[in-house]
Image (cartoon, rainbow, N blue to C red; front, top):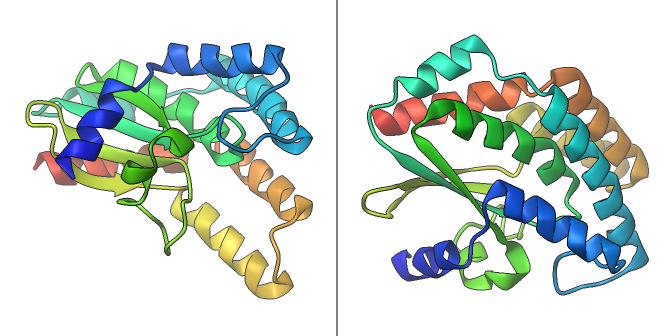
Length: 201
């Protein structure tokens, strides 16, 4: 596992580099990833707008900040993502602000399609679901755990919809984005802080 992680880290992006990569590709009417389509470009454009808004509006709670600052160890959050991914657009701005606030966490991002070996180590129900956040010990580079592709309540929302209607469609995508909008990043913060406190114990 260490070799795919080391390779991924070598080719990884900071949050600002990731944002610039997506922006630059959109100027060429392209999305990240191996597959190119008008739909993926459209989703990437929507996500660009979404992330711009969240970068300005998302608030990290005082409780989250104090618990992250109190971590004993230092960590890397290695995130597998793509620019067209709606969940990633909602979650990465939160993760970035949490990492910055902590003073103990370095955030690095890699693209799924460029890191297949790594992605295959962190499948969800045998699928390449993203985003996936891999918790790494900064000193050793060892993987300590993973989180993703979305908060548990959002996982349940998707599962319930698929059970009732049998598909993932635009209605579900809208419902999911509304869930994120109303949640304001609170659930994600709680889940990630809980995971970090367990790892750091």
